[in-house]
Image (cartoon, rainbow, N blue to C red; front, side, top):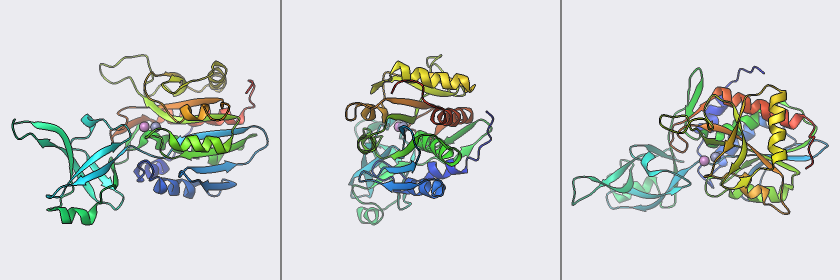
Amino acid sequence: MNRSLDYSLLAKLTQAFGPSGNEREVADVITDSIKDHAESIVTDTMGNLIVRKKGQGHKIMIVCHMDEVGIIVTHINENGFLYYAAVGGLKSGDQVSKRVRFSNGTVGIINKEKDDTVEKKSEKLYIDIGATNEQEAKELVSIGDMAVLTGEFLETENVIISKAVDDRVGCFIALEVIKNITSPYDLYFVFSAQEEVGARGARTAAYTTEADLAIVIDTTFSFDTPKKVQNRTSLHNGVAIKVMDRSIVVSPALKNWMAKIADANSILYQWEIITGGGTDSGPIHLTKGGIPTGGLAIPVRYLHSGNEMVAKKDIIAGIDLLTALITTPLYFEL
Ligand code: CO
Ligand code: ZN
């Protein structure tokens, strides 16, 4: 299939503010973009946004997370510098000299404390928002406030670069599908909250939805940068079909069904096998008596860095495969 896509919605999604537990701005962008294409849109207690496209047959839940990694302010010192903890898997090596933005627009720069005794920098990180003292800083930021890494949206011929590609690209894929399909199934699109702190939103959404099948769309590591292992998930090689991660072993019948549908529709795919990292698929497949759960993963370079890179080709393969999966009658036993 050949698609040319308008990525302006992805730009809006990635630039929205949405650290874990603060997904409202992202949810609003999503609601705005599909309100004419769904039977119902509800927000649950956890902050999950659940979009229903009613249909007859099996109940299928499609899940992608709205939240992004960020930081939370733990202390403000007398000179107006902020101290913080990570919210989700932020690597400290990725933080120095990066900018962060709070929901009120306040921007700060992360840097390392200097070590008094030695002429080098310590490992301790702080945020400089340009305040001259504690009082001034507290007018802009409070203890407990969260911020996200900034990273403007850029589009080239082949790739997208932005903050929060994880997992707004999954949301984008789901939205493109919602806008364009009619499916024989009863579809629940769950835009989940708090994935980055332990897949919490998806857990309760899976319990209430009681789907017959769940398909999770998230990002995955790209192993194709210099000196890394080749022949594993990489950019420009298509959508990845999840086989295993730290939180799930996908049933062979389910992953093979996905691959068969991809083959039948000439959709470029690769296998995702990782030993670290989990996604919403973990808690979902363990809900109640167990829910058949599979995953589509989009390879992304520099995950959680504020400058994440994804290939357009892989996004398109993701849209094509999700579309094919939920419009083709299921032929394996659920
Ligand atoms: Co992530
Ligand atoms: Zn993710």
